[in-house]
Length: 462
Image (cartoon, rainbow, N blue to C red; front, side, top):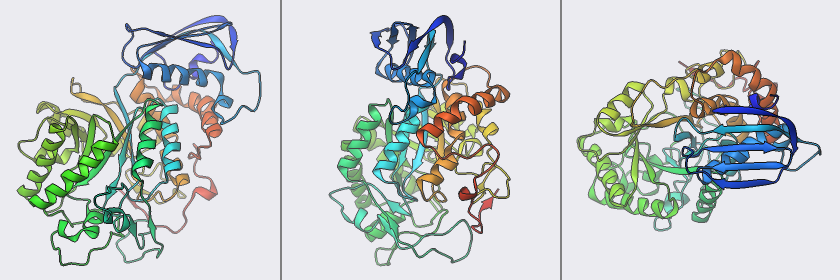
């Protein structure tokens, strides 16, 4: 039936019927507790639509599918033509994984509130349901904490940035910064929730903390030093001092985070800590236990598995899928986000004009054919990562993320075999026009537009 096979992600079952229904259509919503979580069933007739849902998320996804069926013009901000129709029939659908996430790094390059809301819209259009918001790092602190104003007045700005990826001293000389007020973040959380997206915040400790140390030097290894927010990319060796006073400081920071973000999961980092001591591990463990005592689940990257005595938590397996297996064997829940497949800041091709080619080669096909190897009840789902060292505008984020994030969305939602030769025509003929209508400046399938290139800016491919 024309229209049904254009769905991205793919539905579980489809039954076509004759006729069409005008769009926009009257929609009757019914509760259907027999459906799986986040599931829905659409019955489309010439007279209207019945949407049976398992829960509020199921209603969001059912309405999103109607928009997909109506065609690309349904994705525009305002109606530009009449006569859109829906094909009649029944669509029943539910997701493969409960965690279908995307990390968005707003610490390395700040994205305005409006740009974050736009990114939430993009996730919702792909039925992704977790925005892992990376709010702090060596290069910037992006969350207002009223008790500690220097975190943003000092830590929210750097005087310059490395251009591309190199080992030299070259910087652009351009100040960069910004942060979200408490009300900004409450707005982002509420906006995302209305689109069935949970915002999972991340405050990274005890490494990736140079911005916090610049703001409050007593948090760092040498309180008498003159610290600056870092202007380099990579891994800073400046670690938090794992003292009781630093621990009290970050308990207070997390108190504010918990007040702003209702997410049951709260990220605390724990990754890339060069020269970490047992005391640094104890620092992470204490904060994880504090989050548990406050009724939340800590999320840490897979380096936390080197720390003894951790409470049960969520582990983001980024270094290798085997780390996910190790985490599951210890009773932790797992989100798979392997760098070798799902880091969308990494280069998309070996095209000579590929802008700032860093990391591994992750083609569209590589992402679409990713199949999680972990078979465990502890597997919550999968997550793509959009780190932004080399993505300094929303246009650059669009280019890096899409259409690979579209391919990832189908992997995260749809069970069964994923055949790239079947996916590619659907993407080209049906979904890229939707992205065009949304105003997403994705990477063309045959290489970048001239204005998407970055001539002369060095990368570091692996």
